[in-house]
Length: 510
Image (tube, rainbow, N blue to C red; front, side, top):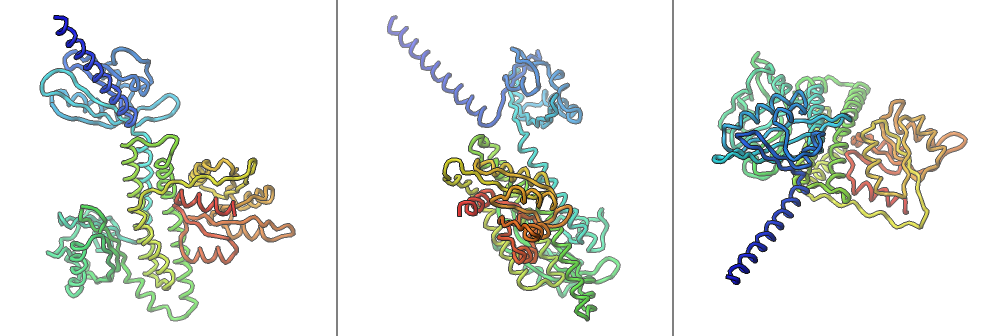
């Protein structure tokens, strides 16, 4: 009897140890994934919440969870009906269910919540988890905002965007692409032949396009460039030029851009004298410069803050957040590559010189490599003698770009960053501080970065502080202008956090 009792006690102790270990692992999973557990009785409606859920809803921690109706009253009014309907509708349907909604707070903050729960086939207890998705949701909104800017810019520039799923033989066109083919936005995409070539393409131009699609099916992530003619429903024949590439990955998806160059080709033939040709080139260059700046600036924030979150050693992202951030960063880089494809098509349509095309091709190759490379860790701060500090001035009128640089340079405690938003403010600040380095945006409200440099270097009291251009305008001619004016370097946005810090360190420790 004593022996049996001893064995029973040992088994109980082992079971208690196992339970404690399981609880420790469960707590770790909760912490890493920002998960909170909840459960509710199907019959009585009684429930239990983790303490974090009470905090999330701004309620005092209690032994019992409030009713679903009380909890849903704290959900954002725009999400409340959908969230409550999702929960009530799941009660008679065993299986997995989920819903996303927002919870507003008294201080103005909004928490994005992803709730997942399991309704049992037998039994009466519903179990679920709440995931705090606030950071990822914010980055996703910024990414959607940038995509909206891209579509708007493409519409303004008359560039059509399209995608083709080779496996499912499905094509999606934006409204500009349909307009190029003489269609209304609500019209369906024209049918294609067995090779995937759209039927409005003239018969004599189809074999070349069919060969491109065949190569897309056989080769991983190839690129293609072509010119072809179409016949619109009104009988008009138009000449198009476009580029396409198959995206890397398991899905056989081709993305491309197209532009109607008929009028452009006619205009080029009509340009007989040099003055008219130079004027057209200048207008196009200014347009592309502005488009480059306006499209790449939002991506500077999306990619820059994503890299800061991924490389944060103080508050590293949870595994689920890291995976989502990596997807977001990859999508941002693919979007950046597509933006550059659009600008390259517009530049070729106007007859850009060979040097500009070569520079753009090199940039594209670099982006393609970066999309598959791991995030480079931020370099450690250089060792400096005690008490050494550097003053750095950043002239930038975009508050988000300024915030990104401030947070990146927060990793360098020996740097003191000062900001100005205009040419005149920047000149006054640099003259007063005589900083170790000046970063200057190209496009400013009262002039451009070249005006600022001329004011600093001229006059009776010139300032010799080294100046670097930091701009989202990546056009080769702008780079050449800045370097010729006296800037020591030209850095483009979106910035690479690790590379940016390395360049700053090298210039301040030289």
